[in-house]
Length: 349
Image 1 (cartoon, rainbow, N blue to C red):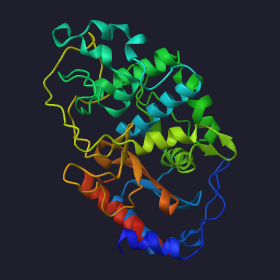
Image 2 (image 1 turned 90 degrees about the vertical axis):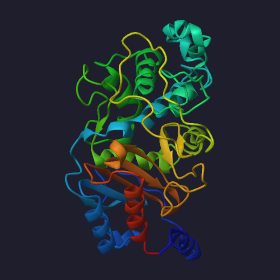
Image 3 (image 1 turned 30 degrees about the vertical axis):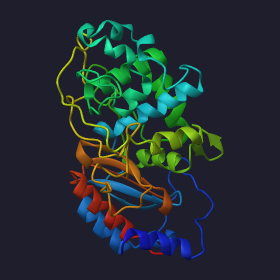
Image 4 (image 1 turned 180 degrees about the horizontal axis):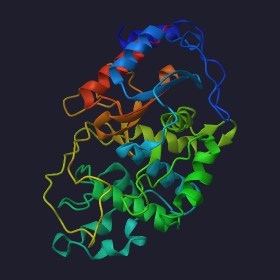
């Protein structure tokens, strides 16, 4: 059944979702049919995705497969967590604006690329979060999209070590846990040092059931069981501000970076934005040809994806649904779209 028809039937049924529910020390669990999901169709979804994962509807854990308590790296799906703490820093007064210059806290940026007019002095926090800083390539900030793990490492290091004043030895205890995961009641001790403090720090290791809690927080517009964790307007900005479809992709011609600049894992110019990249979240936007990113999913769908879809957490607000998976066989946008098509088909209005 086409997704538009599913969403329309849910609305036409005249029955809204129950009052928002949140997990306590553990997830409340129910049979899929109790929250309007088809178990056989979820089985088909599971068989296609593989790995391990869970499906949450109306705040209740309705379906799971594999070891959902296993904590593991989620690769680039960690990036929306950085923008979460960027907006929290804004709320705490640690930075004035997402338009504030990053060089105020990372002064080495001021001395780069003299032959290019010291272009990196113009990098703003928004540029880093949206991968438009052009750090390490020749375009000026905002002129092109460059999906770059050098840029993301600069973002993470400046954000957590300078804005929040942590070290990689203390970031979990000083920032991640008290400011977020303890508030959500995460069960499996997420960490921002998935491989240790000396190997790509800022990579997030988390279980699929704990990642689903983060998704539920955003589905509930930043409120968690009566506690405001992040402002609703910042949730909206983070997840609905995709770069414009016509923004060019970088040519990839290299430019000077800070000496010794590390990477979070990969290089630069790894992918296009497809009109669907918003503060490190992937959204269901339209590309330069006006084709939708995931045509089988509701237009309001957005998610965090790592290793091309092998690791992911996806939120479907119009269906009041969150799904999280890891070590899946999903690779690439076509497989992501098919997985979401199978998931939407499991909704039984």
